[in-house]
Length: 320
Image (cartoon, rainbow, N blue to C red; front, side):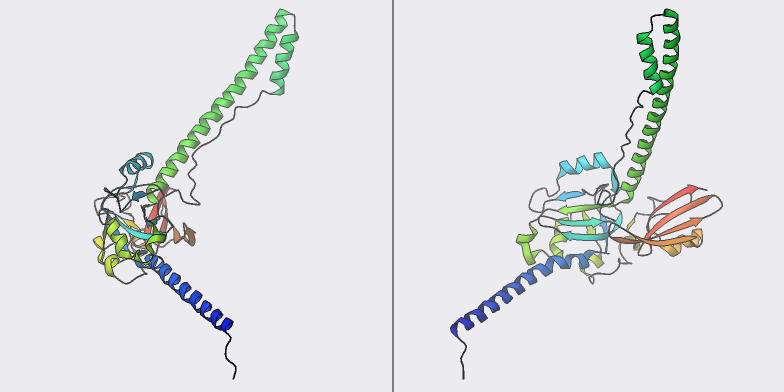
């Protein structure tokens, strides 16, 4: 009977050690991955106004105070408000990075990949035409005063035409830039926001639990019973704050469109009870979220509505 050699036994124990070490690392890595299914799709209520940007609000749990007030104020001033204090919102994504945890609300804030934030419109004055250049050359080479005056009058007319076209095109560019600024501002208001919880996630390992996240955000977020201890994953708690299940909803006295009765947080069934069936509907993906875009038409208006999990998250109304 042959016995394993000493070198073989050493190799065997080395393999066992490597496998055990890999299992330990895997166990440590499981915990951060569990944050997403625990929180995503749940309803929370924000206790502070949130800036309309993907930069969000920086929270440092190991500092006092935890909230970075300077960056918070700067972002509120620069980007405005997307979520107001008291808004009930959906947790749409929780992402664990090396030095922070992104706690994204109602889309995570406008300005992520795929969002067009460029509002600039470039205007370039027209070059001189060949006729204008030719007239300038003729004037410089003409000695007869009468002919020079005649050429100068023609040159002035050609030059004024060019300057009028430039002024018109510049005004159009400025109008276009203002329109783009308004569009981006509207999209920012509809894009949600986020908290950036600044912690060393790698060093924390398996101590980075959902309770740690809730404790870090306790001053700024009210977690519903579903988010605090309900089953992981799935959909928002229908019995959350205000009984709403939307991506971003507000109390009854806020955010309502008096003209049509539309407001964020209505279900698709409620919307179609007011507007009738959609004349068009198609699915799309935006910022990693699956959305259904529906078009409703009446005699006077056209409504474009976007739904996430059957809940109205944004809409626009235009005249037909």
